[in-house]
Each structure stands twice: as C-alpha cells, then as structure tokens.
Image (cartoon, rainbow, N blue to C red):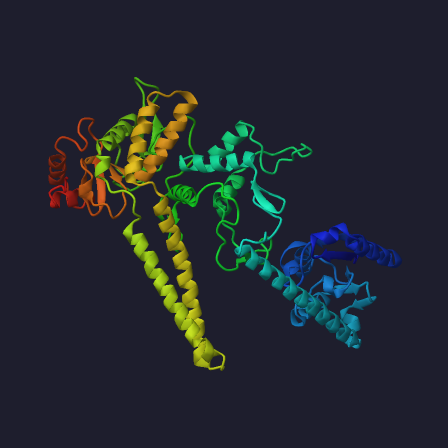
Length: 582
C-alpha cells in the first residue's frame, strides 16, 4: 500500500532551535490524517544546504532517491515537503530535473505551502502547475545566490582582516586554544599533551603506543565532558593523528571556502603565519613529519610498493632495534624474528621470512639479534662525528625548490600575459590559457611537495647529532631497567631508522648495514666505512674492527666460488673499485 514520506530539511543548525522542524512535521501529520495515509517522518536533513545539491549527495534525501531508483518505494507513494525549495535550491535546470525524475518514477510530490500535488497523471492533462513550480524554483535559487554572494563577501573581508592580524575568523579554535576577551589563549593542560604527543613521535613511538600510554595514565581527552555527564571513551589513534597533522600547532591558519563536512572545502590564498599562539615551533613539526614519513611505505602509480616503511607494531619491551630495517640479500624479502628460548641456551634470531616459509629463497642462515645489534651500535660509535658535515639542507632539495619556483613564476607570467587576449574570445588564446592554467596548477602542486621535503630535511638534526644521540642512548640503556629501558630502546630504534637505510643479510657475504647520510656528505668524510655510489656501509660480522679484519679478501674469496650473477651488486662494485675503504 502506498504511503507518505515527509521530507524535512533546513540548512543552518540555528534553525533547529527555532520552529522550523516542528512546523514542517506538524503540517505533514495534518495532511496525512485528513487522507488516512500512513506517514513515515524519518526523512530529515537537518543543517544541510540545498543550494549546491549537498542534500542530493548525502543524507536522507540521497537514501530516499536510491530507494526510488531500486523500486523499493511503491508507485503512487507521496513525498511531502513544505515547499519545493526544501527539495532543491539549485539552478532551475537541475532542480526541475530532480522533480521530474521523482514524478516519472511514480512518486507524487506534495507541497504543503500552496497545496499543490505534482503527479504524472495530473501533469499529462494539465501542465500549468509546471509553470508555477519553475517560478518557485527560480526564486529559491536566486534568493540563495544573493545570500551566498553577501555571505561570501563578508567572509572575504574577514579573511583580509585575519591576514592583517586584526580579526578572529571564527569562534572555532583548535582543542588546545580558547578565546578570552576576544583573544586566543593557550590551555596549558592541553598544551602539555600536544607537546608530549610530538615528542613521543619524534622519539619513535607510533600512534597506538601513544594512545595506550595516555589511556593507561588516565589523561583526559580533549572531548571529555568536564562535568562527567558523558563517559569519556579514551584516546583514539585518530585523535593523535589530528594533533600531529595540525599546522595550527605552530600557529599557522589556512583560510578557505566551502564545507569540510561535504568535502567542498578548498584553501583560499596562502596560509596565515602566527595566527594562533604556537605550541611548538615549525622545525619540531617538520621533524615529526619526517619520522612519520619514514614509517610509511611508498607506492608507485600502479600501487606497487617502491619503498617499504620502517614502522610497525611494537611488542612489549621492544623485541629488537632493527624493526623494518632487516632485508634478505638473496630475495630482498624481510627478515623476521624467531624465538629459540631464553639465554644462555636460547636467543632471538633473524631469519629470512621467504626461506622460513619455503617460498623460494635458499638463505637458510640465522643470525643472533643481540650480536647484530651490538655490532651495529659499536661500529656506529667508531664513526668520527666531528668529521661529518652538519647543518645545511641537502643542496639537491634546495635546488629543486628553486627550480620549481622559477618554473611556476614563468608559467604564471605566460598565463597572465595571454589573459587580455582571452577576453576577446579568440579560441586559440582560450585553449592556450587553459593549458597554461593547467601548468600553473601542476607546478604549484609539485612546488608544495618539494617544499615539504626540504622543510623536513632542514628540520633534521643532522647525521652528527643523530650519531651522538645513538651513542648516548646506547650507554644509558645499559644502566636502565623496566619501562625506562623500554623507552630508551624505542628512542634508540628511531635514531637507527634515521641513520640506517637497511641491514642486509647474505648467507655467504654476511651482514652489512647501509647508512643513510645526507647526499651532499661525501663517503670519505666518514672514517671506518667503505663507500660506493654515495652509499656508506658497515660490515657486522665481527666484534673487533668496524668493518672486519680482512673484509675485501673475504669478498674476493666468495667471488671466486660463485658466478658474478650470484655475488651481490655491492660486493662486485667493492671488488672492482678496490673496496673504496676510507
């Protein structure tokens, strides 16, 4: 049996506190009571605009339209609205299409404000109501357009005043900031939490660990009800991510237009520096982003992993320091940990995951975790930190940013030069303008990415500082116990992820760690390593000397026993260059 569906919509949350909801609902109930028709009043889009069709894309109306398309709404059913502008305030062409689609599907659209009923049977014999409907839709769209322009102009003036530092854009602020007497003030209890989240991230703790620590200590969330009327649910990884991704932490504000809720928000002009009081400095923000980026895997345009991240879940006590770094030099797969019991008889061992699964790798060797860790830390301590360059950002990154800035400026000049010709309607000029506009957009996007990379590089404390930190942490770890030792191991593991690109395990050649210094630091500036192709390598098969007693002789001996195809590329290059030892 056909029934009536009441659709209630208003665009602003303030209308919920007024009479709009009660008025629309009461009229629909009265209409159904007179007709003796069952009413479904669940279709409500409260606080959703219809000017650009947002209610068509999300919410209750979207669900109803999908039910109509699937044939689940019986033909002859009624859709009751206060007026047609509740359905749509789009331009007439789009709003009329929405109305006609419903009518053709067998739905009778009822407008309570003027008592009209739009049905297929009626309109086939009397088309005059369509004239009225088009006039109503045109008026609704024009009202919204004028209102939108006025609101847009007001917000534009607010953005200008915000950039000048004379106005607060909105009353909404980041969770660690309040407004008192028209000024931003920091909420010190929450500021401490924000700083702690960044510090833990830089030290190598992942979001899950940070969340667990905050919840275990009973740290109140930013959304916890101060009067305890609502029981707090504790910290979530999404809450931590929101803090870490917020550039408001160092005071930056990005004005924009549109709605984040409906995914129409877009930046409007450059960000405003020092708009909010800063909790951390920008260098610390970029340093945290660098740590986060190192934990992620990178994929190409086809979704294939081209660089594996060095992150992952941590066991209690941090099972080993080389998380995400170990690679089999045969199959290039990951090295996993196997537990052969407690010392002295047992130990933790590295083993090729592919070989363990009998999936095609013949690297069946095992290496004790504590031996490899000890040797890597010892060999790092041999490096003369004072011989390592420190300070300047990688010249390659800086040059790329400079080149992209020049490219963007040139594209903007060409685009602006042709703008006057475009006004004449010349088709060739319009096509060229479109092409140049695309180039400007592409160059701006590339520049933004390059600037982010450069910012992280500048924020990096440098190889010298990381080496010193690793040595200090290793020394402190030997004297610590319990949770303190776990925290130190976590920080040390993060330092190793920044210092070391990979630790390669080969069944004949042995174990080698590839360091990951800045590209503009030459290999000969780091004693006790052998280098090739811009890479720095430490051999980890011996406890005595940093790269073993007779490393090159061992490599050469292996090379005689195996074809050149089976000897790793790094070994062949080392032999050909005479080792490149510094």
